[in-house]
Length: 271
Image (cartoon, rainbow, N blue to C red; front, side, top):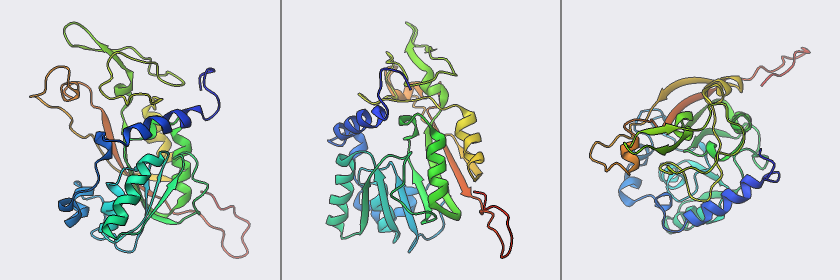
């Protein structure tokens, strides 16, 4: 972390940034009636989720805003949503109350889930958010702890190259101006197509995004790159940039079974 930021300063600044975004931004659109009529279709266009989540314990991680948690609740899951922003969580609570759903909202950071019990969830679903913490490995470790053996972890992340773009040339070519092995908070840039105003972000390399996932107790089952190219978008639109720089990656991973000691054995229980 850069010397100008105190310990956990990224949490305070990102909390404030997302509280502002909870008021009318594109991230604060609650689930619609139409989506709630077929919630799994809205949540999962790739067939990654089981055919039913009824009765399953689902953690919606860093996904406050009244969309993901409401859809899982509509599908019959027992839902907990953890988010750094009380403003975003208020949307979940308000919409759950309006629809008569039971959703547990918890204010907290994705890299410290100490308020949650070990092996207490069947599914963890996380939208793009790991870019707001310095260590994605800590996030993975916490998710591995709270997931049951065989539990499903669905996540989306910003690709490293997306974080490296700093500006455009006069010909609207994209400049990679941040080193791949950059450490600490990302600097301010001219091209803010995939940056949220006021937030502190970090670059996570493929070694961390995928390798770190495997090293913390997961098996990667699928990887997709959402298409964000818009050939009708003006050159200053994020859809234009999506034609040249893929912004996101989606991962489907499974928590591998823990090795537990048998009776009378001195073998260690390895996560």
